[in-house]
Length: 94
Image (cartoon, rainbow, N blue to C red; front, top):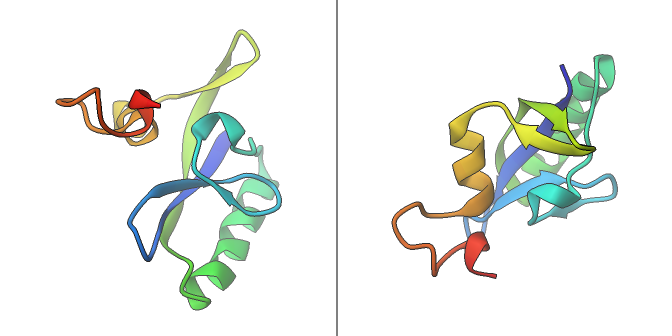
């Protein structure tokens, strides 16, 4: 199953995704990994943790629908969009 690498930006707590050349704030900019390349990316994220850029990197499953990645778990849908009680805040407001 394809996967995406995510973490939280340490200084402000923002949810970020690995975008190939660095961390990006939007899920739709995330790089999609398959197989062993996902584990390699996760190991590479440890360098960013040591630099104090991000915390708690992990991989999560996505499926491809109409050419776009969609998180499998509701938790990741919420992290990608922002607060569920105030749609005028977070990433869904922009």
